[in-house]
Structures are given as structure tokens and as C-alpha cells.
Length: 324
Image (cartoon, rainbow, N blue to C red; front, side):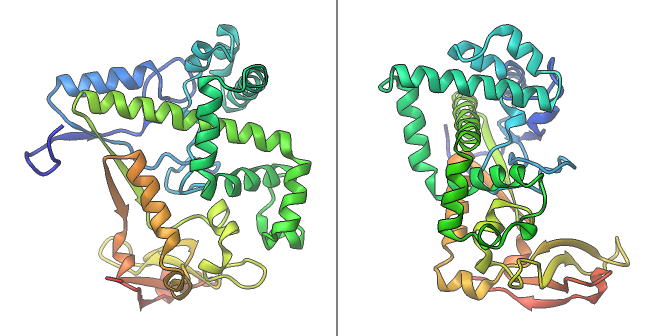
């Protein structure tokens, strides 16, 4: 594949969830490969996919539970059948809706762990161990966050018991031990997502198609990222935002836009060498050939709004670290 800038390229934007198929949501299966073949035959060479993280109930890809994790809705169940972890009828049932898919993924995870107990040196057992090791810097925070959230009836993490709300290591270890089976299933889903995405990425590159990803500048308050790194965000001691994000009034909106996601604590981020951002860039660099930072202007200066504001008009510009 030639260098990105050596020739002019054309591409298309399509989130994988919009691919056709038998299920309630597009996925990384046969239709994704067919789409790659289609755009390659058309002379295009870029597929822009938008963020691929697990979404909230509004299903907006820019409001995710994690900047590193993948959305299990995009998993191809037929791939699990081919691995011998799911029957064809179980896969077909899992296409019905999100709840049915989660049941199918749970069934597949039970079979996967049964097989790996019997053959702990298999290729897939090794791949799973490798994935968990490489992804350790984000994976455990994410699966714990989701398991704890389910345990507390999906209440916001700011309402959890103090030790868990504050992400105290000992309290989190004890609760994770209690919820070990749930956490293991969540870990398996991320393993499957990343296996399938890597296969699709390879398939695209072999056909001279570059995958173009997207990084939202901010992250949702109700996310593993904020919960596990509270000191890196502008929060009060209970985890509530002090200031939030948005953009000022402009030609398109007299009130501006009040996004409501927490602002970064840039001083804290700079003191730790921007490690949180470096890890985020590393994930994007591994998953995509090209990555775009949505609203990257906030890396130079951001519109800071009081958390109790009713309108973005109440905000003001604050310098960010910029070049640093």
C-alpha cells in the first residue's frame, strides 16, 4: 500500500451499524467484507467508520462508555459459529435484538472458556491471554465499570457506595471478585470485538482500503474513562462536573451548544505527561490507518461552561496546553 499522501484518494463514510444484514444492527460479518469489495471496485480507497465504542441508550457513537472498548452490537455472530462457540440456531436467535445478542454472546463465552479449560494451550486461548495483557491498561477498568453498573441497576457511578464511586483499589478488587463471572463474560466480548475488527482491518488493507477512525474530543461522564481517572477531569469530590463542555453561540445557533460532558483537568494531565492521551492515540493508531479528532480546536482553547448553566452562552474561552 502506498503512502497516504502520495496520491489523491476518494472514500465513503458509513458507520458499520448501518450495513445491511439479517439482524437488528450491521456488524463486522459478510456484509462488511462485501462493502469493502464494493468500494474497492468503485475505485475508492478510504472507509471512514466513525467511533466504534459501546454506546448509551441514544446509540450515539460520540457518547461512549469507553474510548478504548468496542461496541458488542457490531460483533458478527456467524464468526462465533465458525469458531465452534455457538450453534447456527443460537446465532440466528441472537440477531433478533440487543438483548438476544447479549444472550448469544454469553452462551459463546461459556463455551469458549469450557474449551480453553480443556485445552489451555490452544491458539485461541493464547490469543485471549495476549489480548488481555496488551489491553490491560484499559480493559479491567472498563469491564469492572460495566459489571458494577449492571450490579447497581445502571445507576450513575456517582451514586455508588463511596469506595466504588471513588474507584478505591481495594473496594474495587473485592467487588470484582464477587462479580468475577460477569466480568469474565464482558472481557470475552471485547476479545471477540477486537479479533473481528483486526480481521476486517486486514481484509480492507489487502484491497488497498484504508480505515479512517474518529476520536471525539470529549468523553461521557458516565464512562469507564472518567470513573477510573477522576483526577484528570474537572469534578467535585463526589464526581459531579464543576465545568462542562460545549461551543459558543455562532451563526448556526444563537444559544451555542451545551454538550454537558466534563471538562479535562489539563494541569493534571500535563503533570502526568499526557499519558491518558498517549494511550488513546495508541489505541486509535492500532485500530485505524487514519484518525480524526472531532472538535480538535479544544486542544488549543476550549469553551468552559459552569455545570449548572442553562445555556452555552454562560461559558468563556480558556487556553488549553496547545502545542505541549
